[in-house]
Image (cartoon, rainbow, N blue to C red; front, side, top):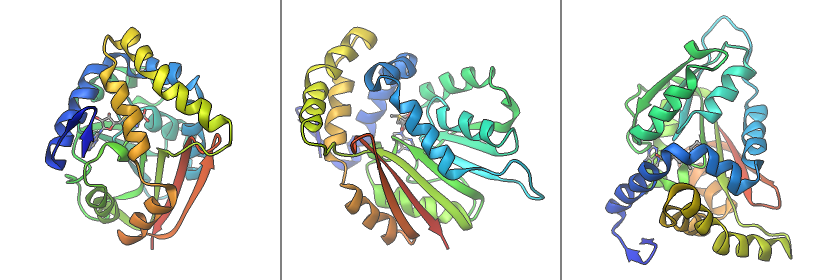
Length: 247
Ligand code: SAM
């Protein structure tokens, strides 16, 4: 695989991804707002609306928010369930988790979340232990997507939901050219100004371009054993929301 101007073995990709998030953790939330003009908030709201977690029930409702970083998705899920859902935020990066844990102290329902350092390819959770598995802008960073999806399938209960939010390829004529220009000319320099380093944001742009098309990604989801695999394009296909079930 390629990483900026370096060619790296797939086994090394994770180390480089970790360097990226070590560098940006402190400014991660600010950069998301700047780079997406705040639109990432709407995409995350859309994921949680699609999940529509229960607000009550006789059994626990457990969600694994994989690559959950600073906890954006987890906070929305807990709020949408008015404090009923229990969310585990798992991420491979301790710095991202630290920012998330600090933020969670001022949530409306801080007791509904726990933070776990874990690799999506090898989860430290028992089979059939979650009602839903969410991952927002995370799967793109995982070197072996097939392994991560197999693990997602394993830890979900039967009837469990998979929701993946990920970048896609802008496809509206005119807008796509503008988006390409913005990605090349604005995002890396903006990264340099805000975090002191442009390289992580060149990686971001590159990783978005290399990620499989929504159709190809849906194929991987099906291969991992999921059923009723669908995807919805958002904001001129800048992002896509993928949904599937363990049946
Ligand atoms: N979900 C959050 C959001 O939407 O704001 C964070 C997304 S951030 C772009 C990507 C996250 O994926 C980082 O926090 C990174 O540490 C994490 N990550 C990368 N590789 C991972 C892996 N193999 N297992 C778990 N998390 C990983």
